[in-house]
Amino acid sequence: MDKPVEMFDRDYEWSELSRFVRYPGPEATLGVVSGRRRQGKTFLLDAVCRATGGFYFAATEATEAESLQQFGTALARHLGEPVPRRFTHWDEAVEFLMTIAATGPTPVVIDEFPYLVRASPQLPSLIQRALGPQGQRQGSAVRLLLCGSVLSFMGSLLAGTAPLRGRASLELVVSTLDYRLARDFWDIVDPALALLVNAVVGGTPAYRREFTLGDVPSGIEDFGPWVVRNVLNPGRPLFREARFLLAEEPELRDVALYHGVLSAIANGNHTRGGIAGYLGRKSTDLSHSLTLLEDVGMIARDPDAFHGKRSTYRITEPILSFYHAIMRPEWTDLERPGYAEQVWDRSQTAFRSKVLGPHFEHLARTWTRWYAHSETLGGLRTRVASGILPDPAARSSHEIDVVVFGRDSEGKEVILAIGEAKYGDVIGRAHLERLERLRELLIRRDDRATPGTRLLLFSAAGFMPQLRETAQSRTDVQLIDLTRLYEGA
Image 1 (tube, rainbow, N blue to C red):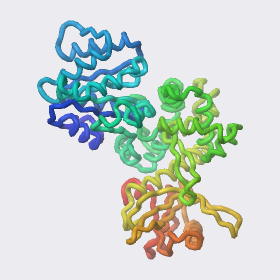
Image 2 (image 1 turned 60 degrees about the horizontal axis):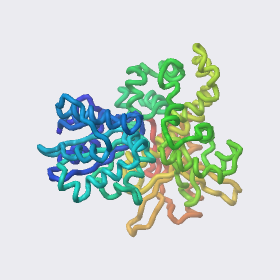
Image 3 (image 1 turned 60 degrees about the vertical axis):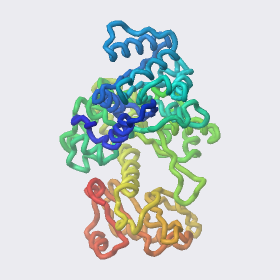
Image 4 (image 1 turned 90 degrees about the horizontal axis):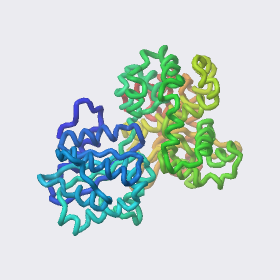
Protein backbone atom coordinates (compact mmCIF):
# COMPACT_ATOMS: atom_id res chain seq x y z
CA MET A 1 0.00 0.00 0.00
CA ASP A 2 1.83 3.06 -1.28
CA LYS A 3 1.68 6.26 0.71
CA PRO A 4 0.13 9.16 -1.27
CA VAL A 5 2.75 11.44 -2.76
CA GLU A 6 1.00 14.50 -1.35
CA MET A 7 1.33 13.26 2.23
CA PHE A 8 4.22 14.86 4.14
CA ASP A 9 6.18 12.48 6.38
CA ARG A 10 3.87 10.27 8.53
CA ASP A 11 5.96 7.27 7.37
CA TYR A 12 5.65 5.54 10.74
CA GLU A 13 1.90 6.11 10.98
CA TRP A 14 1.37 4.91 7.41
CA SER A 15 3.43 1.76 7.94
CA GLU A 16 1.52 0.88 11.12
CA LEU A 17 -1.83 1.42 9.43
CA SER A 18 -0.67 -0.62 6.43
CA ARG A 19 0.35 -3.49 8.67
CA PHE A 20 -2.99 -3.36 10.43
CA VAL A 21 -5.26 -3.26 7.36
CA ARG A 22 -3.22 -5.88 5.46
CA TYR A 23 -3.34 -8.46 8.23
CA PRO A 24 -4.56 -11.57 6.33
CA GLY A 25 -6.50 -13.23 9.17
CA PRO A 26 -10.21 -13.94 8.61
CA GLU A 27 -11.31 -12.39 11.92
CA ALA A 28 -12.28 -8.78 12.57
CA THR A 29 -9.67 -6.57 14.26
CA LEU A 30 -9.82 -3.27 16.12
CA GLY A 31 -7.53 -0.24 15.99
CA VAL A 32 -7.73 3.08 17.84
CA VAL A 33 -6.29 6.27 16.33
CA SER A 34 -6.11 9.47 18.37
CA GLY A 35 -4.36 12.81 18.45
CA ARG A 36 -4.97 16.51 18.89
CA ARG A 37 -7.13 18.27 16.34
CA ARG A 38 -5.62 19.56 13.11
CA GLN A 39 -2.79 17.02 13.02
CA GLY A 40 -3.98 15.29 9.84
CA LYS A 41 -5.72 12.20 11.26
CA THR A 42 -8.69 12.50 8.90
CA PHE A 43 -6.41 13.01 5.89
CA LEU A 44 -4.40 9.95 6.91
CA LEU A 45 -7.36 7.62 7.46
CA ASP A 46 -9.24 8.82 4.39
CA ALA A 47 -6.12 8.08 2.35
CA VAL A 48 -6.03 4.54 3.78
CA CYS A 49 -9.64 3.98 2.74
CA ARG A 50 -9.08 5.41 -0.74
CA ALA A 51 -6.01 3.21 -1.23
CA THR A 52 -7.82 0.02 -0.18
CA GLY A 53 -11.45 0.55 -1.06
CA GLY A 54 -12.38 0.85 2.59
CA PHE A 55 -15.38 2.51 4.21
CA TYR A 56 -14.94 5.91 5.86
CA PHE A 57 -17.61 7.50 8.04
CA ALA A 58 -17.20 10.89 9.73
CA ALA A 59 -19.58 11.29 12.66
CA THR A 60 -21.13 14.63 13.58
CA GLU A 61 -22.64 16.07 16.73
CA ALA A 62 -26.12 14.63 16.35
CA THR A 63 -28.79 12.59 18.10
CA GLU A 64 -28.68 8.81 17.90
CA ALA A 65 -31.43 8.73 15.28
CA GLU A 66 -29.67 11.32 13.11
CA SER A 67 -26.35 9.52 13.41
CA LEU A 68 -27.90 6.19 12.40
CA GLN A 69 -29.51 7.86 9.40
CA GLN A 70 -26.20 9.44 8.33
CA PHE A 71 -24.38 6.16 8.89
CA GLY A 72 -26.91 4.19 6.83
CA THR A 73 -26.70 6.70 3.97
CA ALA A 74 -22.89 6.61 3.92
CA LEU A 75 -22.78 2.82 4.10
CA ALA A 76 -25.27 2.40 1.25
CA ARG A 77 -23.23 4.80 -0.87
CA HIS A 78 -20.08 2.80 -0.15
CA LEU A 79 -21.79 -0.47 -1.08
CA GLY A 80 -23.28 1.00 -4.25
CA GLU A 81 -26.85 0.60 -3.05
CA PRO A 82 -29.43 3.06 -4.43
CA VAL A 83 -31.43 3.35 -1.20
CA PRO A 84 -29.99 4.32 2.20
CA ARG A 85 -29.93 1.51 4.74
CA ARG A 86 -32.27 1.92 7.66
CA PHE A 87 -31.04 1.01 11.13
CA THR A 88 -33.27 1.35 14.17
CA HIS A 89 -30.53 0.76 16.74
CA TRP A 90 -26.75 0.68 16.75
CA ASP A 91 -26.66 -3.02 17.59
CA GLU A 92 -28.04 -3.94 14.17
CA ALA A 93 -25.86 -1.32 12.48
CA VAL A 94 -22.70 -2.71 14.08
CA GLU A 95 -23.75 -6.29 13.37
CA PHE A 96 -24.20 -5.52 9.68
CA LEU A 97 -21.03 -3.42 9.49
CA MET A 98 -18.93 -6.35 10.65
CA THR A 99 -20.05 -8.41 7.62
CA ILE A 100 -19.05 -6.06 4.79
CA ALA A 101 -15.53 -7.50 4.31
CA ALA A 102 -16.75 -10.54 2.39
CA THR A 103 -13.95 -10.41 -0.19
CA GLY A 104 -11.04 -10.02 2.24
CA PRO A 105 -9.56 -7.58 4.79
CA THR A 106 -11.34 -4.22 4.51
CA PRO A 107 -10.64 -1.10 6.57
CA VAL A 108 -13.65 0.56 8.19
CA VAL A 109 -13.01 3.99 9.71
CA ILE A 110 -15.36 5.68 12.15
CA ASP A 111 -13.98 9.19 12.59
CA GLU A 112 -14.97 11.48 15.49
CA PHE A 113 -16.09 8.39 17.40
CA PRO A 114 -16.63 10.39 20.64
CA TYR A 115 -19.55 12.20 18.97
CA LEU A 116 -21.36 8.89 18.49
CA VAL A 117 -20.68 7.66 22.02
CA ARG A 118 -21.92 10.91 23.51
CA ALA A 119 -25.35 10.19 22.03
CA SER A 120 -25.10 6.38 22.26
CA PRO A 121 -23.01 5.36 25.29
CA GLN A 122 -23.62 1.67 24.58
CA LEU A 123 -21.53 1.69 21.37
CA PRO A 124 -18.22 0.45 22.87
CA SER A 125 -20.05 -2.48 24.44
CA LEU A 126 -21.74 -3.32 21.14
CA ILE A 127 -18.38 -3.29 19.38
CA GLN A 128 -16.95 -5.49 22.13
CA ARG A 129 -19.70 -8.02 21.50
CA ALA A 130 -19.09 -7.90 17.75
CA LEU A 131 -15.42 -8.68 18.37
CA GLY A 132 -16.25 -11.55 20.70
CA PRO A 133 -16.40 -15.24 19.71
CA GLN A 134 -20.03 -15.19 18.58
CA GLY A 135 -19.61 -11.96 16.63
CA GLN A 136 -16.45 -13.27 14.96
CA ARG A 137 -18.30 -16.37 13.74
CA GLN A 138 -20.91 -14.20 12.04
CA GLY A 139 -18.59 -11.41 10.91
CA SER A 140 -15.80 -10.92 8.39
CA ALA A 141 -12.26 -9.53 8.11
CA VAL A 142 -13.22 -5.96 8.96
CA ARG A 143 -10.30 -3.80 10.07
CA LEU A 144 -12.22 -1.40 12.31
CA LEU A 145 -10.49 1.89 13.11
CA LEU A 146 -12.02 4.18 15.72
CA CYS A 147 -10.66 7.72 15.59
CA GLY A 148 -11.12 10.78 17.76
CA SER A 149 -9.55 14.02 18.95
CA VAL A 150 -10.80 14.00 22.55
CA LEU A 151 -7.66 12.55 24.07
CA SER A 152 -9.11 11.87 27.50
CA PHE A 153 -11.97 9.87 25.97
CA MET A 154 -9.85 8.01 23.42
CA GLY A 155 -7.34 7.08 26.10
CA SER A 156 -10.10 5.67 28.29
CA LEU A 157 -11.46 3.42 25.50
CA LEU A 158 -8.78 0.79 26.14
CA ALA A 159 -8.06 1.47 29.82
CA GLY A 160 -9.01 -0.23 33.06
CA THR A 161 -12.35 -1.99 32.91
CA ALA A 162 -13.52 -0.35 29.65
CA PRO A 163 -15.43 -2.73 27.34
CA LEU A 164 -12.75 -2.59 24.62
CA ARG A 165 -9.84 -3.17 26.99
CA GLY A 166 -7.57 -5.82 25.46
CA ARG A 167 -9.42 -5.88 22.13
CA ALA A 168 -7.25 -3.52 20.05
CA SER A 169 -4.45 -4.62 17.74
CA LEU A 170 -3.39 -1.04 17.04
CA GLU A 171 -3.22 2.02 19.29
CA LEU A 172 -1.83 4.86 17.21
CA VAL A 173 -1.31 8.45 18.34
CA VAL A 174 -0.85 11.01 15.53
CA SER A 175 1.41 13.63 17.06
CA THR A 176 2.39 17.12 16.00
CA LEU A 177 5.45 17.43 13.78
CA ASP A 178 8.61 18.01 15.77
CA TYR A 179 10.59 21.18 15.18
CA ARG A 180 12.86 19.71 12.49
CA LEU A 181 10.01 18.20 10.50
CA ALA A 182 8.02 21.41 10.94
CA ARG A 183 10.83 23.39 9.33
CA ASP A 184 10.76 21.08 6.30
CA PHE A 185 6.96 21.18 6.17
CA TRP A 186 7.00 24.98 6.10
CA ASP A 187 9.79 24.98 3.47
CA ILE A 188 11.92 27.34 5.57
CA VAL A 189 15.66 27.29 4.89
CA ASP A 190 16.88 29.71 7.57
CA PRO A 191 16.94 27.95 10.99
CA ALA A 192 16.53 31.31 12.80
CA LEU A 193 13.27 31.93 10.95
CA ALA A 194 12.18 28.32 11.43
CA LEU A 195 12.62 28.72 15.19
CA LEU A 196 10.56 31.93 15.26
CA VAL A 197 7.69 30.37 13.32
CA ASN A 198 7.81 27.20 15.42
CA ALA A 199 7.62 29.25 18.62
CA VAL A 200 4.29 30.68 17.44
CA VAL A 201 2.51 27.82 15.63
CA GLY A 202 4.50 24.70 16.52
CA GLY A 203 4.19 21.64 14.31
CA THR A 204 0.44 21.50 13.65
CA PRO A 205 0.07 20.75 9.91
CA ALA A 206 -3.23 22.59 9.44
CA TYR A 207 -1.63 25.91 10.41
CA ARG A 208 0.64 25.71 7.37
CA ARG A 209 -2.08 25.29 4.78
CA GLU A 210 -5.71 25.72 5.77
CA PHE A 211 -5.15 28.40 8.41
CA THR A 212 -2.67 30.58 6.52
CA LEU A 213 -3.41 29.57 2.92
CA GLY A 214 0.25 28.76 2.44
CA ASP A 215 1.51 32.16 3.61
CA VAL A 216 5.11 31.61 4.75
CA PRO A 217 7.36 34.49 5.90
CA SER A 218 9.85 35.25 3.14
CA GLY A 219 12.67 35.97 5.62
CA ILE A 220 13.49 37.23 9.10
CA GLU A 221 12.39 40.73 8.14
CA ASP A 222 8.97 39.37 7.12
CA PHE A 223 8.38 37.43 10.35
CA GLY A 224 6.77 40.35 12.21
CA PRO A 225 4.48 41.27 9.30
CA TRP A 226 3.60 37.56 8.93
CA VAL A 227 2.52 37.42 12.59
CA VAL A 228 0.49 40.60 12.15
CA ARG A 229 -1.32 39.40 9.03
CA ASN A 230 -1.94 35.79 10.12
CA VAL A 231 -2.00 35.51 13.92
CA LEU A 232 -2.95 38.96 15.21
CA ASN A 233 -5.44 39.59 12.42
CA PRO A 234 -9.08 39.20 13.61
CA GLY A 235 -10.06 38.15 10.10
CA ARG A 236 -7.86 35.03 10.15
CA PRO A 237 -8.63 31.70 11.89
CA LEU A 238 -5.41 31.63 13.92
CA PHE A 239 -6.61 34.72 15.75
CA ARG A 240 -9.19 32.76 17.79
CA GLU A 241 -7.60 29.34 17.55
CA ALA A 242 -6.40 29.24 21.16
CA ARG A 243 -9.91 29.99 22.41
CA PHE A 244 -11.41 27.33 20.16
CA LEU A 245 -8.91 24.69 21.29
CA LEU A 246 -10.29 24.94 24.82
CA ALA A 247 -13.91 25.26 23.73
CA GLU A 248 -13.61 22.05 21.67
CA GLU A 249 -12.66 19.96 24.69
CA PRO A 250 -15.86 18.73 26.37
CA GLU A 251 -14.02 17.87 29.59
CA LEU A 252 -13.01 21.51 30.14
CA ARG A 253 -16.27 22.97 31.38
CA ASP A 254 -14.97 25.95 33.38
CA VAL A 255 -13.21 27.54 30.40
CA ALA A 256 -12.33 30.73 32.29
CA LEU A 257 -10.42 28.75 34.93
CA TYR A 258 -8.46 26.79 32.35
CA HIS A 259 -7.56 29.96 30.47
CA GLY A 260 -6.37 31.35 33.80
CA VAL A 261 -4.15 28.32 34.44
CA LEU A 262 -2.65 28.58 30.97
CA SER A 263 -2.06 32.32 31.42
CA ALA A 264 -0.27 31.64 34.69
CA ILE A 265 2.07 29.15 33.03
CA ALA A 266 2.64 31.37 29.98
CA ASN A 267 3.64 34.20 32.31
CA GLY A 268 6.36 32.18 33.99
CA ASN A 269 4.53 30.41 36.83
CA HIS A 270 5.48 26.79 36.25
CA THR A 271 4.88 25.23 39.68
CA ARG A 272 1.54 24.39 41.21
CA GLY A 273 2.15 26.95 43.95
CA GLY A 274 3.09 29.61 41.43
CA ILE A 275 -0.01 28.95 39.35
CA ALA A 276 -2.19 29.08 42.46
CA GLY A 277 -0.62 32.36 43.56
CA TYR A 278 -1.17 33.89 40.13
CA LEU A 279 -4.85 32.93 40.27
CA GLY A 280 -5.34 33.79 43.94
CA ARG A 281 -6.34 30.22 44.81
CA LYS A 282 -5.12 27.42 47.04
CA SER A 283 -2.80 24.98 45.28
CA THR A 284 -4.98 22.06 46.40
CA ASP A 285 -7.88 23.59 44.48
CA LEU A 286 -6.03 23.19 41.17
CA SER A 287 -5.37 19.44 41.20
CA HIS A 288 -8.39 18.56 39.08
CA SER A 289 -7.83 21.41 36.60
CA LEU A 290 -4.16 20.56 36.08
CA THR A 291 -4.96 16.87 35.65
CA LEU A 292 -7.62 17.59 33.03
CA LEU A 293 -5.32 19.92 31.08
CA GLU A 294 -2.73 17.13 31.11
CA ASP A 295 -5.29 14.57 29.97
CA VAL A 296 -6.30 16.63 26.95
CA GLY A 297 -2.66 17.23 26.05
CA MET A 298 -2.52 20.99 26.55
CA ILE A 299 0.07 20.96 29.32
CA ALA A 300 2.80 18.55 30.40
CA ARG A 301 4.16 17.94 33.87
CA ASP A 302 7.94 17.61 33.87
CA PRO A 303 9.58 16.03 36.94
CA ASP A 304 12.49 17.95 38.42
CA ALA A 305 15.84 16.36 37.62
CA PHE A 306 16.98 16.45 41.26
CA HIS A 307 13.76 16.18 43.27
CA GLY A 308 11.44 13.30 42.49
CA LYS A 309 8.44 14.90 44.18
CA ARG A 310 8.86 18.30 42.54
CA SER A 311 7.66 19.08 39.03
CA THR A 312 6.95 21.97 36.72
CA TYR A 313 4.24 22.54 34.14
CA ARG A 314 4.64 23.74 30.57
CA ILE A 315 2.21 24.41 27.74
CA THR A 316 2.62 21.86 24.94
CA GLU A 317 0.95 23.82 22.12
CA PRO A 318 2.91 26.96 21.09
CA ILE A 319 -0.16 28.80 19.81
CA LEU A 320 -1.60 28.58 23.35
CA SER A 321 1.56 30.04 24.86
CA PHE A 322 1.62 32.82 22.29
CA TYR A 323 -2.03 33.64 22.87
CA HIS A 324 -1.78 33.79 26.65
CA ALA A 325 1.55 35.64 26.76
CA ILE A 326 0.95 38.12 23.91
CA MET A 327 -2.65 38.22 22.71
CA ARG A 328 -4.88 37.80 25.75
CA PRO A 329 -3.48 40.84 27.62
CA GLU A 330 -4.04 42.95 24.48
CA TRP A 331 -7.35 41.47 23.36
CA THR A 332 -9.34 44.71 23.42
CA ASP A 333 -6.98 46.44 21.01
CA LEU A 334 -6.47 43.34 18.86
CA GLU A 335 -10.19 43.01 18.17
CA ARG A 336 -10.15 46.47 16.59
CA PRO A 337 -8.83 46.23 13.01
CA GLY A 338 -5.67 48.23 12.41
CA TYR A 339 -4.12 47.91 15.87
CA ALA A 340 -2.28 44.62 15.43
CA GLU A 341 1.00 46.20 14.33
CA GLN A 342 1.08 48.49 17.37
CA VAL A 343 0.40 45.57 19.69
CA TRP A 344 3.15 43.53 18.08
CA ASP A 345 5.65 46.39 18.36
CA ARG A 346 5.08 46.87 22.08
CA SER A 347 5.04 43.12 22.77
CA GLN A 348 8.61 42.38 21.66
CA THR A 349 10.06 42.15 25.17
CA ALA A 350 7.28 39.81 26.29
CA PHE A 351 7.67 37.73 23.14
CA ARG A 352 11.38 37.20 23.73
CA SER A 353 11.12 36.46 27.46
CA LYS A 354 7.83 34.57 27.69
CA VAL A 355 7.66 32.81 24.33
CA LEU A 356 11.04 32.54 22.62
CA GLY A 357 13.14 31.92 25.73
CA PRO A 358 11.09 29.00 27.14
CA HIS A 359 10.56 27.55 23.67
CA PHE A 360 14.28 27.57 22.94
CA GLU A 361 14.98 25.79 26.25
CA HIS A 362 12.42 23.15 25.33
CA LEU A 363 13.99 22.64 21.91
CA ALA A 364 17.39 22.28 23.58
CA ARG A 365 16.03 19.40 25.67
CA THR A 366 14.31 17.93 22.61
CA TRP A 367 17.56 18.00 20.64
CA THR A 368 19.44 16.43 23.52
CA ARG A 369 16.82 13.71 23.93
CA TRP A 370 16.33 12.72 20.31
CA TYR A 371 19.12 14.04 18.10
CA ALA A 372 22.40 14.35 20.03
CA HIS A 373 24.94 11.56 19.46
CA SER A 374 26.16 9.51 22.37
CA GLU A 375 29.66 10.86 21.59
CA THR A 376 28.32 14.37 22.19
CA LEU A 377 26.79 13.43 25.53
CA GLY A 378 29.48 11.07 26.75
CA GLY A 379 27.22 8.02 26.75
CA LEU A 380 23.78 6.67 25.93
CA ARG A 381 21.06 8.88 27.39
CA THR A 382 18.11 7.42 29.23
CA ARG A 383 16.22 10.61 30.04
CA VAL A 384 16.53 14.39 29.79
CA ALA A 385 15.07 16.89 32.23
CA SER A 386 15.54 20.30 33.78
CA GLY A 387 15.93 20.98 37.45
CA ILE A 388 16.61 23.27 40.40
CA LEU A 389 19.92 22.53 42.11
CA PRO A 390 20.03 23.73 45.74
CA ASP A 391 23.18 25.46 46.99
CA PRO A 392 22.95 25.53 50.81
CA ALA A 393 26.35 27.16 51.27
CA ALA A 394 25.29 30.17 49.20
CA ARG A 395 21.72 29.97 50.52
CA SER A 396 20.43 29.93 46.97
CA SER A 397 19.51 27.57 44.16
CA HIS A 398 20.42 27.27 40.50
CA GLU A 399 18.22 26.45 37.52
CA ILE A 400 19.76 24.01 35.07
CA ASP A 401 18.00 23.96 31.69
CA VAL A 402 19.25 20.57 30.52
CA VAL A 403 20.21 17.56 32.64
CA VAL A 404 21.08 14.35 30.78
CA PHE A 405 20.96 11.00 32.53
CA GLY A 406 22.43 7.69 31.45
CA ARG A 407 23.79 4.48 32.98
CA ASP A 408 27.30 3.24 33.58
CA SER A 409 28.60 -0.24 32.80
CA GLU A 410 27.13 -1.57 36.04
CA GLY A 411 23.66 -0.16 35.35
CA LYS A 412 23.92 2.68 37.87
CA GLU A 413 22.34 5.98 36.86
CA VAL A 414 24.82 8.75 36.08
CA ILE A 415 24.55 12.38 34.99
CA LEU A 416 26.10 12.46 31.54
CA ALA A 417 25.75 16.19 30.91
CA ILE A 418 24.27 19.46 32.09
CA GLY A 419 23.44 22.39 29.87
CA GLU A 420 22.34 26.00 29.62
CA ALA A 421 20.17 27.44 26.84
CA LYS A 422 20.06 31.17 26.05
CA TYR A 423 18.04 32.36 23.09
CA GLY A 424 19.23 35.95 22.80
CA ASP A 425 22.64 35.92 24.49
CA VAL A 426 25.97 35.60 22.70
CA ILE A 427 27.49 33.03 25.02
CA GLY A 428 30.99 33.55 26.34
CA ARG A 429 33.44 32.31 28.94
CA ALA A 430 31.26 33.45 31.87
CA HIS A 431 28.49 31.04 30.89
CA LEU A 432 30.95 28.16 30.72
CA GLU A 433 32.39 29.07 34.11
CA ARG A 434 28.90 29.01 35.60
CA LEU A 435 28.35 25.49 34.28
CA GLU A 436 31.73 24.42 35.61
CA ARG A 437 30.79 25.68 39.08
CA LEU A 438 27.47 23.87 38.89
CA ARG A 439 29.23 20.67 37.90
CA GLU A 440 31.51 21.00 40.93
CA LEU A 441 28.48 21.59 43.15
CA LEU A 442 26.77 18.56 41.65
CA ILE A 443 29.80 16.35 42.25
CA ARG A 444 29.78 17.33 45.93
CA ARG A 445 26.05 16.75 46.35
CA ASP A 446 25.22 13.93 43.92
CA ASP A 447 27.35 10.84 43.34
CA ARG A 448 25.78 10.48 39.88
CA ALA A 449 27.90 13.41 38.62
CA THR A 450 31.60 13.11 37.79
CA PRO A 451 34.39 15.38 36.48
CA GLY A 452 33.59 13.87 33.08
CA THR A 453 30.00 15.18 33.08
CA ARG A 454 29.70 17.10 29.82
CA LEU A 455 28.84 20.80 29.59
CA LEU A 456 26.36 21.81 26.87
CA LEU A 457 25.87 25.43 25.83
CA PHE A 458 22.96 26.34 23.53
CA SER A 459 22.58 29.73 21.87
CA ALA A 460 20.53 31.15 19.02
CA ALA A 461 22.72 34.30 18.95
CA GLY A 462 26.09 32.55 18.71
CA PHE A 463 29.28 32.17 20.74
CA MET A 464 32.27 34.39 21.43
CA PRO A 465 35.47 33.44 19.57
CA GLN A 466 37.37 32.72 22.79
CA LEU A 467 34.74 30.22 23.87
CA ARG A 468 34.82 28.50 20.49
CA GLU A 469 38.58 28.08 20.84
CA THR A 470 38.13 26.61 24.30
CA ALA A 471 35.49 24.16 23.09
CA GLN A 472 37.76 22.94 20.30
CA SER A 473 40.42 21.94 22.81
CA ARG A 474 38.08 20.24 25.32
CA THR A 475 35.99 17.11 24.87
CA ASP A 476 33.74 17.95 27.81
CA VAL A 477 32.39 21.21 26.27
CA GLN A 478 29.83 21.21 23.46
CA LEU A 479 28.48 24.31 21.71
CA ILE A 480 25.10 24.00 19.98
CA ASP A 481 24.04 26.84 17.69
CA LEU A 482 20.93 26.98 15.51
CA THR A 483 22.56 25.15 12.62
CA ARG A 484 23.54 22.26 14.87
CA LEU A 485 20.17 22.34 16.61
CA TYR A 486 18.40 21.85 13.30
CA GLU A 487 20.91 19.82 11.31
CA GLY A 488 23.62 18.36 13.54
CA ALA A 489 24.06 15.91 16.37
